[in-house]
Image (cartoon, rainbow, N blue to C red; front, side, top):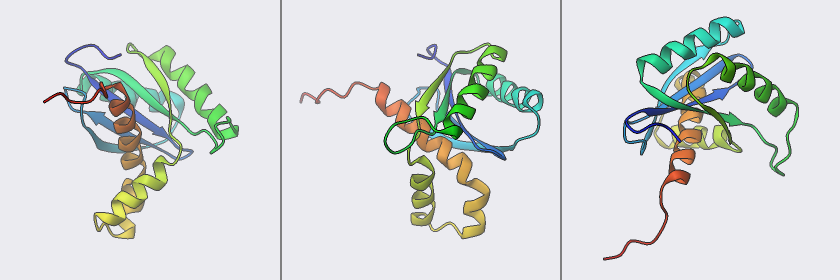
Length: 148
């Protein structure tokens, strides 16, 4: 779990882009932050480390693209290898989080918000990262029934 007072960052790793989202300081709400164009691992890692410092991130959640049946396909294995290398370069913990259907959920949210297709293409990876992060944050909260 992230250290108190620090944010959680989520990454949606694609072949060409990395969607980035960050939580609020209370680790309750996720918001899309940016999309990084993939370059080399060294350049990607440097950009991610700068965002970690800038936003006071205490934990990184990386979306793991499992198949609908829960198995790990070729893309999931690529994400695992990348995340393992990134974890070694970071000063904060990194976890993998099931991201099944995050991109389709992000697309639907953007359509419902009335975003034009061109704008959706530019931001879909960051919004998908926010969907992954919100799912993670929601799973961390106590879901016991409220007592009135």
